[in-house]
Each structure stands twice: as C-alpha cells, then as structure tokens.
Length: 114
Image (cartoon, rainbow, N blue to C red):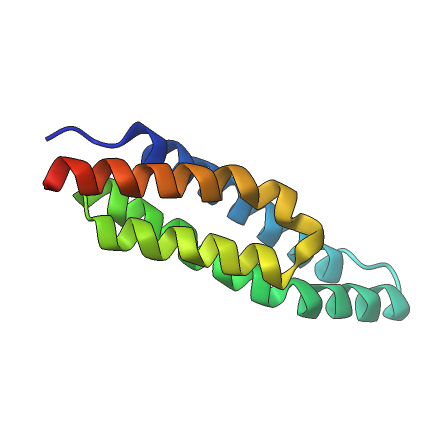
C-alpha cells in the first residue's frame, strides 16, 4: 500500500517543529541566569503552551495517519495545526506548510482508500 508523501513530509516537519518548540521555550526557563529571567521565560512558555500542545498532538496524529494510511487521523492533524496556528498567530507562518501538506495528504489518502 502506497503512503502519502505529503503526509509523511508534514509529519516530519511537525516533529521537527515540536522539538524546536520544546527546546526553545523549555530552555528559556531552565537556562535562566536570574529570577526575573526565569519568570519571563515561564510567562512566555505559558503563552505558547496551547500552541505547543496543539502542534505536538497534530504531529502525533499526522504520524499515525501516515503510518497506517488513516484519513481520519490526517484530518485531525490538519485541523489541530490550524487551531495551533490561530492560538499563537505570531508563529502561524511556521505552521502553514504543515497545514497545507496535511490537507493534501488527507485528500490523497482518502482518494486511495475510496
């Protein structure tokens, strides 16, 4: 059974972006030199946390959809990327390629199964 290349690429990008988010915002709290830096890092992490959660869940659903050729998982991943982009609009530019690839992958998986 052929796999959707767009969904696989979207999964890889999602995993890379999720790792970046966790390292970048987790490191801002752990690598603080002073108390005020730690507080600022904690506030920044709290503001980005909903975006992080949506993107990580989307990457998980996309990966499951790509591995098992399940269109429902691909659709949930694409929707979660959209929600994650809206939750932190400043970082939507990083999520747009994954949104497009996820919807294209969903369409190709759906077409193959029909």
